[in-house]
Image 1 (spheres, rainbow, N blue to C red):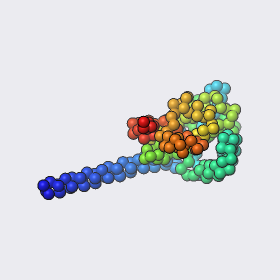
Image 2 (cartoon, rainbow, N blue to C red):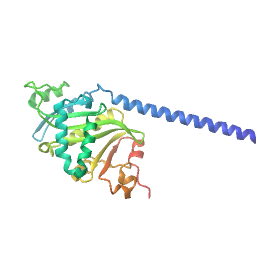
Image 3 (spheres, helix red, strand yellow):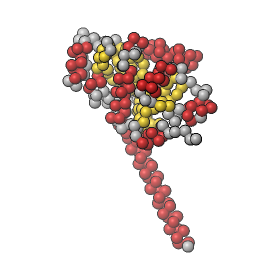
Image 4 (cartoon, rainbow, N blue to C red):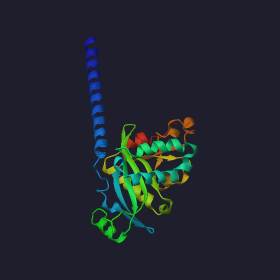
Length: 260
C-alpha cells in the first residue's frame, strides 16, 4: 500500500511539473505574439493597401501610421486639441486629471497610431492605393488631419488583445462611415497579428459611441468591465469596457456570461 501511495505521489508531482511547464510555454508564446505585433518599425497598414484610402459619402481621406514616440510636435498638439474638443464634456470635472493621463499615454513607444488626413488629390491617390503604393501628395504637403486612432497590443486576463485607446474624429467627418471603416481596419490588424480580440473603453455618458460599438459593430460589454465584475461597485464607475473576441478561449474569458 505504501508503495502505491509513493507511486501516486510521484505521478502527481510529474503531472504538476508538466502542467507548470505547459503554462510557462503558453505564456511565453503569448508574450512573443504581443512582442512581435509591437515591433517598433512595423507599419501595420502595409498588409492592407485598400484601407490606405477612404472615398465615400462625399469624404476623401488617406491613412498613415506612426508610433507614439515618433509623433511630431504639430501632430501631438492636434491630438491634444481634438481630445479636448471631443472628450472634455463627457469627462466633466474628471477631465483635467484624465487629460494628463492621456498626454502621457499618447507619446509612449508602444502606442500605435493611424492618422487620418484629408486627401488633397483623391483621384491620383486612390489609384496609388489600388496599386499598393503609399500615398504621395500633389502639392508637397500632407492634407490637414481630421482624426486618429490610438491602439496597443497588450494582455487582458492573459489573452493577447488589440486595445483601442482612442478613436477620435472631427465633427464634420463623423456620420460618413469613416469610424466603421477604421474599426474594420483595426480588427483586421488584430487578426493579422493573431490577437484574441479587440478591447476598448467607452464613457457611459457617450451614448452615441456605445450605440456605435454595440449596435452597429457587434461589441459587447466585457466580463472584465466594472459593471460585470461587480455590478454594485461598477454602477459608480463612469465607463464600460467593450470587446469583440475572435476565438473560443478569448470568448470564454472576455465574454464570459454572468453566473446565475
